[in-house]
Image (tube, rainbow, N blue to C red; front, side, top):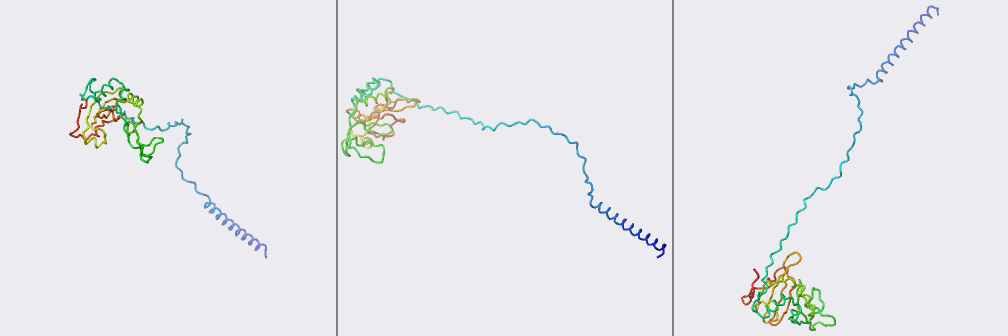
Length: 252
C-alpha cells in the first residue's frame, strides 16, 4: 500500500470515529434531557410569617344547670273546732267524763274504766294480735284488760295507773268536740257489748297543728274503750242509724 493510500485510510477512519463520537454525544444529550425533571411551576408563595404562641384559656368545667327549687307549699291544717268549756249534754256519765277531762283528773278518769274479758289466742301469722295469750296462759284462757286503739287495737292489762298516764298524755290539751250515741244496729256492727254506748269525742292538735280526735266509748256504767289518736274523725264507723244520733253535734 502506498503512502498516499494509507493516508486516505487513516483520514477515513478518523471521520468514522468522529461521526460515532458525535452520534453518542447526541444520544447522551437526549437522555439527559429525558432524565432531568422539568422544574415544577409554582405559585408565588406569600411571605412566611412566624406564628407567635398566644395565651390559651382553659375553660371552666361545666356546671350543672341551676334548677329552680320549688317553694314548698305550706300545709294549712284543717280548722280545730271545740265547744266552750262548761258545755254539757245532760247525760250524767257523759258529763262526768267531760268534767274530769276539763279538770285533768286522770286518776279519777281511769277509775271509770271497765275491764273486758275475752278468750286469749295462740300465736298466728296475722299481726298485730291483741288477744295473744300472755305468759303462762293457754289458748282459750280468759284475757282481761281495757280496750285501746292507736292505729291498731290492743287489750291493755288492767292497770289503772298506766291508763291514767296515757289519758293525761293524750288529753292534756284536748277540748270537747262532739258526743254521739250509737244505735242498736251500730252496736251490733261494732260488736259492742253494752246495751247503750256513747262516744265522747275530744279534739287536740299535734306538733304540726293538725287535729286529732281522742275519744271514749262509754257504756251506761263506765268507760269501755279509748281511741288515742285519730287523724280523721272516727265518724266513718257510724252508720247513721235512726236509732242513734248526736247528743252533742260537732262543734261549729
